[in-house]
Image 1 (cartoon, rainbow, N blue to C red):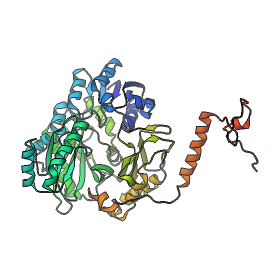
Image 2 (cartoon, rainbow, N blue to C red):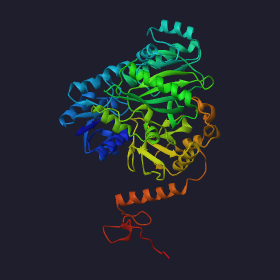
Image 3 (cartoon, helix red, strand yellow):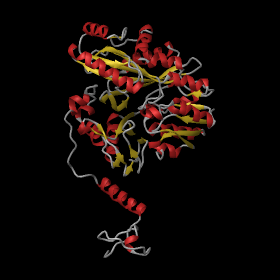
Image 4 (cartoon, rainbow, N blue to C red):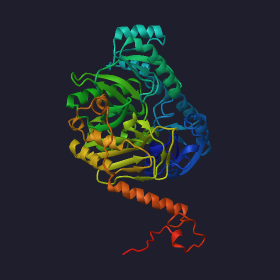
Length: 504
């Protein structure tokens, strides 16, 4: 087993990996940018090292800087988390070439499955159904001709990366040239790769993914599905497992296709096969593969009892998978809500500022994977997701009820969050009935505005406590009307102890 692992990431995923390493007795090294010098993940790791200025291109995306620190500090493995360098095959190869273990798939498999176009070709060869599309040329004239054959509406998609970046929906041929140019610009900025391709748009599909694992002993399994249909800007915000849509037969067929994909490319470690499902016909199509740990992995952990980060580490260390497919099952129901520092009532624009108070809900079946705490600064430099809230129930109704309670009791002051929006979604009739498709938000919440009700008591208590704590930190130096009170250390106006005059 490894002695020391460097975590090439930040925020809640870095915290999550640190927790599992602590339980395995493995020392951890956190990396941080100038903006994250006092971030939670730097406080929890055994060692923390700076890797550059705030912009990701100069810090978390600087592979040479990160690898240099890993070697200097005597690390024997590197975990990339998700995002940043996690799906960069060249970086993975450089880690391996330096004599460290890459906790993830082999670079060859990453190159095949990390590119959406080569992944589509591999899946076609393996007999896995794919969404109709075009990927033969990058020439605009060829793309325009292919679009006419595919028909509209269609999607322009970036070959690399994910998260909805470099993706555009096009409803008519006149809009395609601008969409091609826009998608290329965003893809180049996000992934340093401006290649794109076309894909037929399936109207109102379900987005369902399967967690998969392979080891170096020829074993491959899936750990069932996650329903990821509720999205904003093509990015997931609520996930659950089991999916309300899948029956036993469809679950079996999709699981077999996911494992076939793993075997077809000799895939090792954790990955996710993403599919679009037509709710009317039950037909499913391969969409893409994420060659890394997923943001929504906690709900799979909740219903299977498998710590996926620990399993990643053990498989990377050469151990075989500790179970067979027939050993696996889903127990109970789990839902995850992604907590973003953003304003859903204002086109989901990010919110920045200082977290004045963070109070996490604590209760049976409630889990919080957070990357922030009181006093942290939310900046413009990174993804606005700051935490994940997970609820585990005996069944779907119970999980929804627990999630509603947890959202009501999750207090984050100082920045605007999507918590009220998430609560509106999970308490809606459409969600409770399982009527979830990728256009759910547009269909049901396009004009959503927050309630004007007064804040809950917990928020008021937290606000008062935050003000008191700030006063303690600064020291009281003024009287009741704000005038300076001198240097007398015994003056009641210099105390922040709760002292009051005239109490009964």
